[in-house]
Length: 310
Image (cartoon, rainbow, N blue to C red):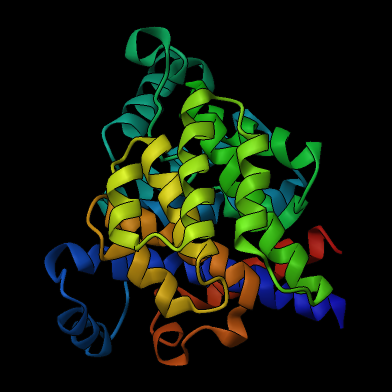
């Protein structure tokens, strides 16, 4: 049953990402939980943003290409943007895609020129990286693939480091589920502190580990870490939201999106990790039934699991 379990977890990661993304986007307008839940319950379709759109392209690339080819993946991202520019993309990726096309250069070369040659340290690479965690699960290959996929739009060390740590979180979520082990959030967080390659991510993940150890309330953790589009704020907080209640999808989303900040991306990242841990079959059925492009997401999850078997 390992193959079927992995398929369920992979589909859970993509649908979990989409649900967090869509519900988190609604939370900008309906920040109070009860009002938000009423809107979600009344929605015919829970529409996701660029977070999930780019995760879909990464999952498709992994399943079809067997790995991360930066030039081809950049072309996939650019084509997805041109097909659906209304998904809510930030200013960076469209600029990269169009400049790359105009100059006849690969996207990752253009991304390295942004922000005075430092590149972006935003959370856009981490928001889409869940398929890498599902595919590789652990080890140097995961780190390499996460960093390569990030570099297409995010050349800054912090942006790439955050993507690696998010991918590792998803990979550990899958690994523990496949083994039938209880995920120890505090232990995982301390492992991520050691894995961090930048001082900023190491410091913020240290706050996560301490908060999970002493039970600091989420609102205080949110204040200490931050929840902005900067990768060293939103990614650690999304990981915290998952690790404090790894088997409870609604609690994970509540924490990720109801404490302000970049709500949709926070919930997309946390939702992807939780979905990868509990699987599609354990996601809230009423929500999953209304996820936009549900069958496509499930099919991609299955294809990803089949391409990278346990």
